[in-house]
Image 1 (cartoon, rainbow, N blue to C red):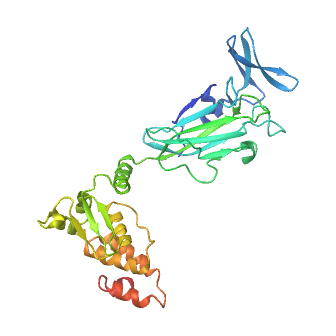
Image 2: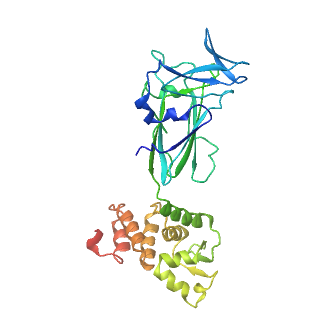
Image 3: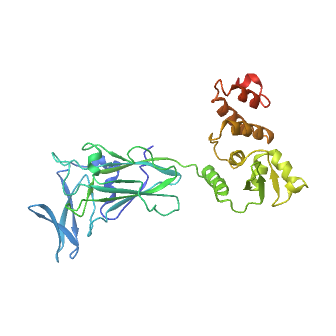
Length: 330
């Protein structure tokens, strides 16, 4: 959807001219609006080569096209526009429209070097841009919006985006942009936060309180509470007075580390990744069935069946018939 309620910020200039809602009252580009720059600030002055930059001890009236946002910078490369998503939304894409300059595609105000930096909610802007181009005007036809990013949408939880725009070395200090259209998407905060928290538990391995011993000698750390919630079998095992039920205890499983990690990823709410060998995937089906993880059992079984060939048919039938009825998959 179009996020017309997004917040616009800029390093200088009247940022409200970027909103698509202004298009109904805009005039042709050849008509101008004016504002007065205080004495002592840098300003553009008309000359033979277009506009030059200088200082004056007197106030000066500056003319700017009605249908454009124009920066008002003193130093080269400082102009930026920032878009903040409204509450409950994330930024999906920015669409930048450049002014139509008659027969020429580029004038002294056309942005050439463009960088886009993004940030997730409550986090600083990233150090590296997600988009950068040195001839930005060449990405679209005159008058048509240029999407940012050019191919894919912004990352899922992007709530801030800052666009740095500047001319090349031979151009002027300031730039003009005709409009900025913002596409947003719904942000399901609670569910996403739950997923992110569990993912952090799995990836950081902080405060683990049990070990799982694998058949190949490896040990994998885990959180007792997570496994007890995911599997009723784990819950009964961890409640027992045996060594498995004590904090810091060890549970032994008859499968290698790759299978154990795939099993635990499911317990932590992570998506299934079918990167196991056929032998390991069949072992995962067996362990998922043993721990009453029905969804993982079915996902792994379906993934294994997709590898059906004359060479693997016997192994598949032997590995799956114990846990599934024959008419369910074969």
